[in-house]
Amino acid sequence: MLVLRYSPASPYARKVRIAADLLGLSERIEIVAADAADPADSLRRQNPLGKIPALILEDGSALYDSRVIAEYLDHLAGGGWMIPADPSARFAALRLQALGDGVNDAALLIRYENFSRPEALRYDEAIAHQQGKIDRALDALEAAPPAGPVDIGHVSVACALGYLDLRFAGEWREKHPRLVAWLEKFARAIPAFEATKA
Image (cartoon, rainbow, N blue to C red; front, side):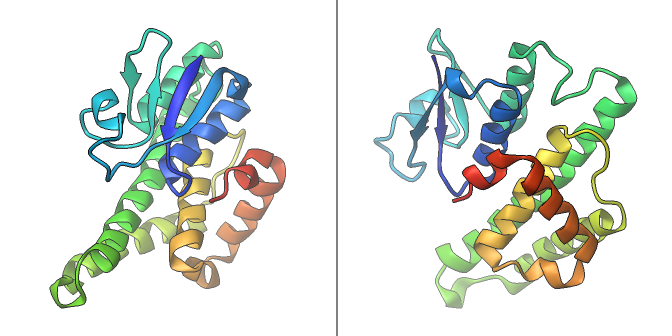
């Protein structure tokens, strides 16, 4: 059996869990929590970066990060499902995945700045820089919400929006009604989205 090391709040682990569900692989994966901050957690031996998600294969080797894991799961399912085979659709999906993951990257850096540093040491310019990335990405997605069959790009964007809801009280919603409508439609169509909510 495969083992997914994860944290319930991780948007990247959520992406992998949703992809596994959509590919019909959930029953083949044991979900095991990891504490990336704990030096004693075996995660650091499984992934030298000490980051989640990490997928432990049946031979004991590990795959990381979420992009690699998603591609591996797509391969296990026969290929071309979450990551389309057609070059045009493939690179559109991968670009959308990069946009969703980029929103998560920026949101996590803001969270770390706000919650890991004492207030006197917080760097407002760094926070504003990361917020600018999120704002531009959301504006691009508002102008052109994901369309067509669900692929890894759709899942990545949905998980990024879910993370913004979780950590930033859904502040993005007011200015992005088309994106809100898209996420509501995605959530109705993909039960794993709600099932993986932290």
